Structure formats: structure tokens, C-alpha cells
Length: 62
Image (cartoon, rainbow, N blue to C red; front, side):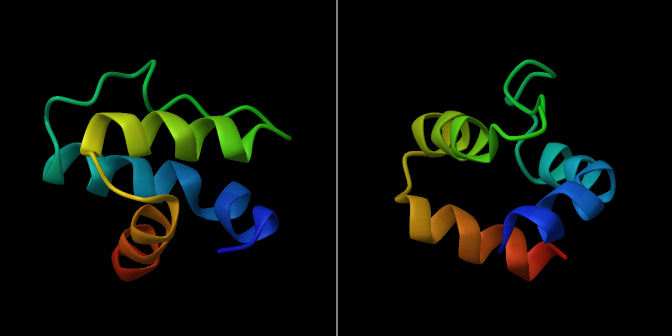
């Protein structure tokens, strides 16, 4: 998922992510422009998955 794709779809994806993992907080899901890697890192840590796994999971939601 490239940066533009993540930026454009994040609000839509965020709701789906919260449904799938209710333990994620708004801070965990906070998207700041230019900080895609930080967001993916937070998701990696919380979900116990690799970055590639997180990216593939997000793609499957979108």
C-alpha cells in the first residue's frame, strides 16, 4: 500500500481496523501525514505481525 493510497483511505480503513481489533486505541490509529511508517510500526507492535503482514491485512480491508 503506497503512501497516497493509505492517506486517501485511512478514515474508511480505520473503522474496519477498530471493528477487527477493538483493543486498538485512537492513539494507535492516529495518522499523520508523512508518518506512515510510524502508524505501521504501532500496528505491528499491537498486532504482533510483520510490517508486510500489516500492509497485506490493510489491503484486504480496503
